[in-house]
Image 1 (cartoon, protein in one colour):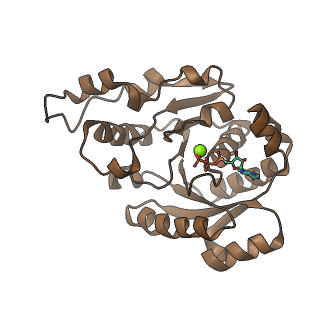
Image 2 (cartoon, helix red, strand yellow):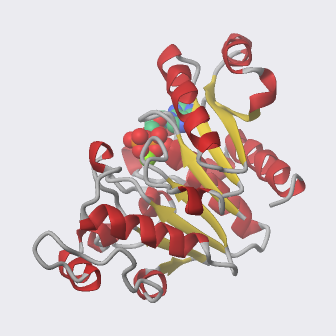
Length: 252
Ligand SMILES: Nc1ncnc2c1ncn2[C@@H]1O[C@H](COP(=O)(O)OP(=O)(O)OP(=O)(O)O)[C@@H](O)[C@H]1O
Ligand SMILES: [Mg+2]
């Protein structure tokens, strides 16, 4: 199963991605976490050691230039890339991680070598069959070409109870549907009270929301200590389990 996670900045994409990885792993499922955010921190969330030493693949200029066979303004459209995921993958406590990075959103559709490389790499990752794949995207899904998008079973758009976040959902949703992602659903995060739920139910349609994650007071400690592990003791971990069960039950 391939699961992408999108949504406005700061809504909780990395949190959801990290929680899903933990739950899958605890269920005995092999997981490959893919960080496609320029400000990569999924590795920190998952407790990978020395994350600051992991160079996002997109920053490996020499590798990209060599594989893309860049000559002046020309380069290869189908670079050799099949060895890249395994070569740069890290593993910690049974979870695998690839830190891909991204090109600037504005350039995502561009035909520069980095953008093409990234698209091919995501496609290569989406072809993998042995693990569940969880991709923490930057905000939207600009880096997904149709051929790759169709390999994704789910795009989960994280929304918090705010108008801006809902607007972001409204922008991403049709784009994701359009490029062929099988199921596009919202995950409501930072729910403090019934009114928050009602707000999102009203603006997004109840049936577009797969699940809810409560606002957690533990985040002040999480943020101070950079210790996400304590979330395993929180109700949002139980809620995340419920969300994963729904994903598994509706099949990949
Ligand atoms: N359920 C929650 N309860 C309380 N605070 C939360 C919750 N989820 C996320 N947050 C807060 O929002 C911050 C951002 O969360 P997170 O890093 O998961 O978002 P993001 O969408 O990945 O952000 P970015 O767009 O910067 O990558 C967290 O550091 C935390 O302070
Ligand atoms: Mg993030």
